[in-house]
Image 1 (cartoon, rainbow, N blue to C red):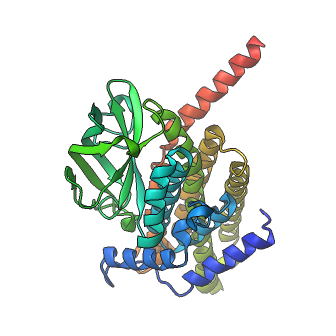
Image 2 (cartoon, helix red, strand yellow; image 1 turned 180 degrees about the horizontal axis):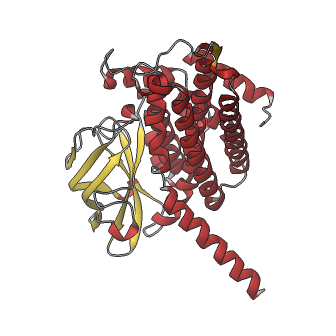
Image 3 (cartoon, rainbow, N blue to C red; image 1 turned 45 degrees about the vertical axis):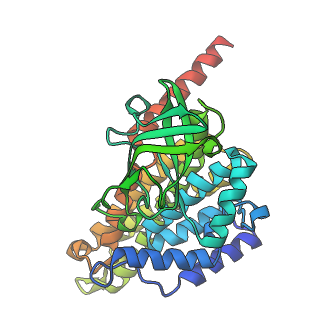
Amino acid sequence: MFLLNEDRELILHSIKSLLDGINPYAPDEEAIEDYTFKLINKLYEEDYFSMAIPEQYQGADLEYVSAMLILKEIAKIDAGIAHILGAHSYGFCRLLRNFGSKELQDKVFWKMKEEKKIGTFALTEPNGSNLGNLELQAKRVENGYVLNGTKAMVTYGRQADYAMIFGLVGKQNYTIFLCPLKKQKGITFGKVEKTMGMESAQIAEINFEDYFLSYEYRLGEEGQGIEIMCDMLAISRITNGAIALGLAEKAVDLGIGYTKERRLNGRPLIEHINIKFTLAEAYSRLSSIQLIVMNAAEHANEKCDLFEASIVKYEATEAAKKICDSMMQMHGGNGYLTEYEIERLYRDVRLHTIVGGSSELLLDLIGNCIIEEYEQLVQE
């Protein structure tokens, strides 16, 4: 198993203590928006929403293993809220830190700290996230740009205060803009989509119609958008793995607990050989996820590599999906009932082989990288 130093053990203990006693969202208890707001506010008050904000802005600026431990634990309670925190920290704050001007950082980071602002990232459009389908246009005008287009499936889209928007200047200059969202002329929001799981992520469309943005809100240079997006995806795919790890850990805990209590032919389920084999297989997969996710996070403290992160995301999310499925199967018919928590985990984990790059897209990317590396070796 991945060994933690004293500082990381303390961080893990702190987030577990904060979440202790918090029940996962239950649709018949309270509105999802209210539940999400309360838990986000609790996390904000304890400074977890500043984990990617630089220290000069009184941020925590956590190293990546500690951050992944936090996301993992939050995912056990609510993977949607872990996803919001991941998008805010590594789809927004990290990009602002790495590519935003000093003036823009001063303007936005202080507001985030003082007014509990939340950021997100918007890449996908109604026609998909493929670069060839990108339609959002940013037209140069005097002193800035005018944006027109729609971003779809934006995490916490209606509630976020800022979004990193991936768009086109002209026909080929992929560029990223930091867009304030609240009380802005030229922005409207679509409805919060009804989803199979991850309800608290509250995905929605953001529509831009003649939305003016001054030059200072552009990240990097015109045409640097793909480079910035790849930098974001590298760490975000590790966060996807960490959230999937949290879901898988919780599923195994529930599976062990259930099989100790449930009896078959006069014996607890856990004493039956096939159940032991199923648990052993799930726990082995779980241990593998933990090792690859935390190892990649450790590497990311030095350099975050998109190829490695894509492998981690593929392996972790596919394994977590299998774990949640087998633990639900172990619950029998009860696993299909909403009163059993495994049912929620099963629904929540399903998104993770899609979001942040589908498993099929990742395999294509990994395969292309392998072929390219092999061809280079042959030429040498």
